[in-house]
Each structure stands twice: as C-alpha cells, then as structure tokens.
Length: 151
Image (cartoon, rainbow, N blue to C red; front, top):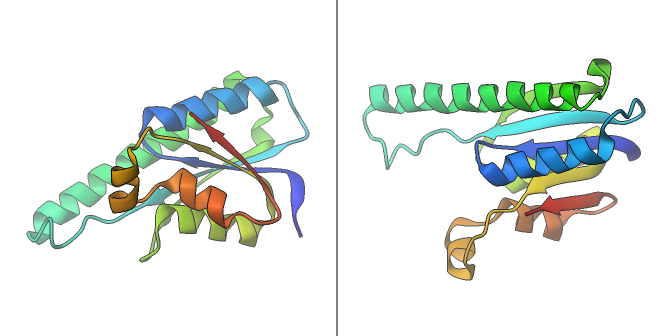
C-alpha cells in the first residue's frame, strides 16, 4: 500500500544529492506529518578494476564510510530544518548486482513510499548511455508514486 506522506530520498556523495536534500528540507521544514527515509546504495568495487583483494577491501571500506557520513549529514540537515527526529530514518543497502536506480525503486515498492527524491547530475547523452543515470532509471520505472528530480 502506497502512503503519500512517506518519502524516500536516494543519496550519494555528490553535490546534486545534497541539492535534492536541501530542496526537500525547504519544502518540508517544520513538518511533523511526513516520514522520511534516507537511503544510500553501496556499490562494491569492481574486481576487474581492482584485482588486488586488499586494495578492493580498503576501497570498499572507504566507500561505506563516505556513504555513512553522507547519511549522517543528511539526517542532521533535516533535523536542523525542524523535521521530527522520530519521522527520520536512514539505511545503507548493498546493490547486490542491481543498479542504484533499480535498488531505489525496489525499496520504494517494498516500503510503500509515495514520493521518491533524487538529485540529477548533468550527464551528456553519451555518458548517460554508457554509465546509466539514477534519476533517469527512477523516472522511467516509477509507478504509483511521485518522483522529485532536483537539479
């Protein structure tokens, strides 16, 4: 069941991700009726790009720490915007072979989130084709929810 006052925010270490969060804080500032889940998706380092297991483990730990730091920063930004702490939660999930956009939309469907908020990087069409775009995946696969893409 979709609940329209439940909001899922996809975060990463990028500036567009912070822009989306700032926008959300401005729109919801002082709200005590919306429940916000801050979600970061962890992509493990590619073994082909990082064949050394030790190097891969170090890089994986760095990525996790960076995402955990972003989640903490985002949580505090929303608290400063006067959203009730009891209405905020965070989660760091591993992609498990899926794209970040797929993970976000799977999470949305499973959790019944009525709104998904993501930032948009300014990728060229060629970059988007080669590397994919989280915001594009979210927009094109969304059903039964509202999507906010903040540039």
